[in-house]
Length: 228
Image 1: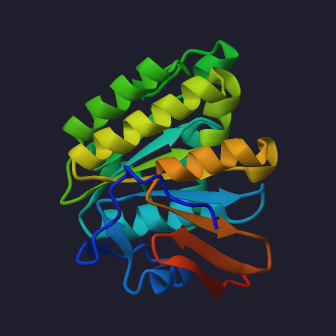
Image 2: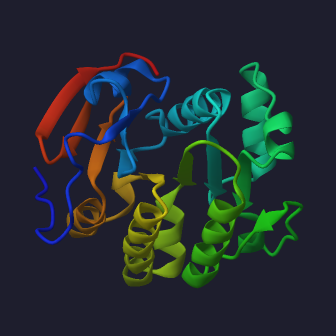
């Protein structure tokens, strides 16, 4: 098990639970992920990270919460199409600012973003745009999704990317929001993965056809998810 850093506060046992709509994950946390908290989804391509984020977004939006979806590996329009393919129309939620897409993908290829919220991959720019979105998002609770952290670490460099991660964990905790991030474990050596996991409250490990593993203050818990 990856140990947690001693100076990082753990999630209190009495923390409020936030149902995700993904039964396997809600079972791990006995009713939902802690709110507020910071959780890393660790999994290779095809392990279900995108599907989890889309399900969680729909579920929480329909409960009256706000979702800030930071796109670093795809255009927001493609995520809208995925949502619509699942029978969910994101447009009404975007119109009232309960769903905010932040485009951190287009500028990477020198394209002009069509989004209201967009940023480069520079850590400072990402942080400023996320804080702006947190302030402007409309909803009972606020969930920030960064899909994915892999590209940030790859483009910004590990040192700068991890500094951004630690900063966002602190700032979202201060804002009483939950932060969810995804990371491909095949992209970096074990020491980098360990540092990323130490920066957050807990890690959900996803492997195709295997059990979900959660690493946090309570140790490792296994729950089978044949298909998410």
